[in-house]
Length: 156
Image 1: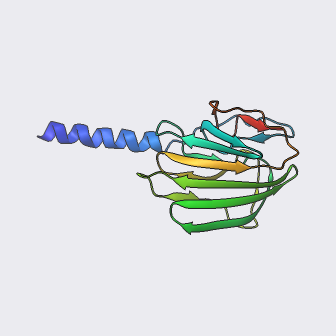
Image 2 (image 1 turned 180 degrees about the vertical axis):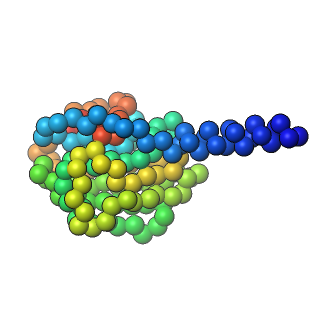
């Protein structure tokens, strides 16, 4: 029984480390927006891009652009809305925790200045993230694309 318990503990530690990884990212320069989350693009509707984060994706979210946090709305532990005023326009990032996760953490506060690629929050396990961008930007991704937070250019 002792060996089985040790295997369970080791697997739990490895799983915890895997789900809480936040690898460094190479942030592209220039006047563009990067994806706020790792995941697969599941919908693009007008100027809103929706991403699904599987349990295999990194669950830390990053700022899509340099800018100032102007609003944070968190009515529950499962949902968060973050607004950023950037040089490219007003951005809205929404995050939902999955059925198993049920927790969204926000690392920034209203008034904070963030740089493109900075960590702004985390969602535990499988989740959903959306970004609404200004209508004058050109979306560079399509449904089915897998994006990487802080690295994949989603609009210019």
